[in-house]
Image 1 (cartoon, rainbow, N blue to C red):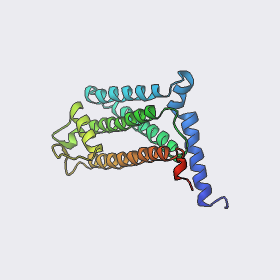
Image 2 (spheres, rainbow, N blue to C red; image 1 turned 60 degrees about the vertical axis):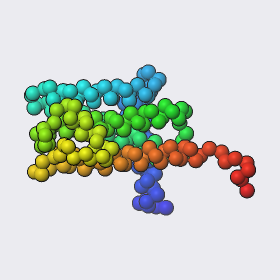
Image 3 (cartoon, helix red, strand yellow; image 1 turned 90 degrees about the vertical axis):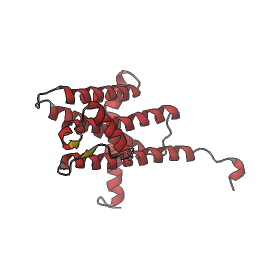
Image 4 (cartoon, rainbow, N blue to C red; image 1 turned 90 degrees about the horizontal axis):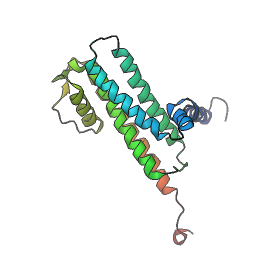
Length: 196
């Protein structure tokens, strides 16, 4: 295995993800200061809900790119932390139910991130979106239901790009969470009667 081998590449990716999760992520900061990383998940959700309300209440366009960057940064944090945890599938959580609840909270926060992004291009939808409709459309989209009552205009390519990204990221996140819980469930000791 040389320095350019695929194994070495993935080892470096795993190391970088682990470094982000343990040193750079706000999840790690909250774990240091408050000793509860779950506090960050709740705080992140509140920040996203405030950003969603601000997108529709603030008339000045100068703030809207900041809100978009904030939402995308929080989305990247969610994805990097959960990808890092999925890369080490053998690590068992301290509290299984807590891990499940925090993962589901993160999944819902992804929908709120996209609701914020949809709010930035609300005029590209038929009918135009308000805060509640953006949140509704985002949850319908991430769940891949697609009722068809709200659709992007045919020339609203930004909105269409956001919809595609939300579906892809939502499916990726579900795959990560399922892989984590299947690995945790299957890593329990095998009963003696099944051993050879």
